[in-house]
Image 1: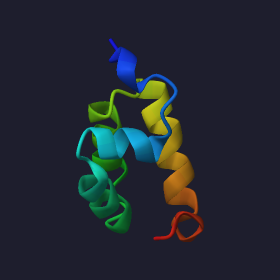
Image 2 (image 1 turned 90 degrees about the vertical axis):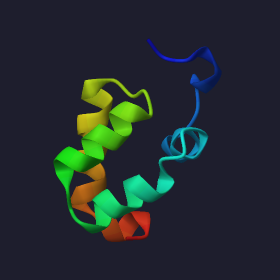
Image 3 (image 1 turned 120 degrees about the vertical axis):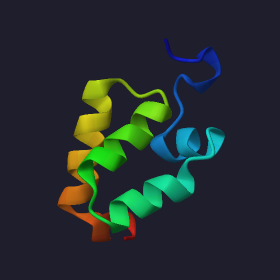
Image 4 (image 1 turned 60 degrees about the vertical axis):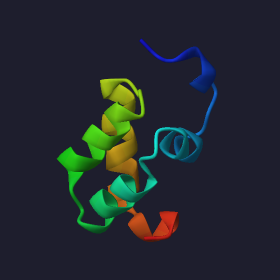
Amino acid sequence: MTEPSIRGMTVNERLFHFGLVESFDLAVKARDHAGLVEVLLNAQFSKQQAEETAITVLANPAYYGF
């Protein structure tokens, strides 16, 4: 279940809230889809949200600053 205080937060806000920014960055830089999904799940995104976000970010990492 999603923590009520994070509802409406952006991806970046959730990553910061859970201390996952570095893990996210490392997974993107390594082009590690499974690792990226795991980080997003730890940020309390649903499996579907995590998969979709990972696919989107890894399809064009330069767009997201990587």
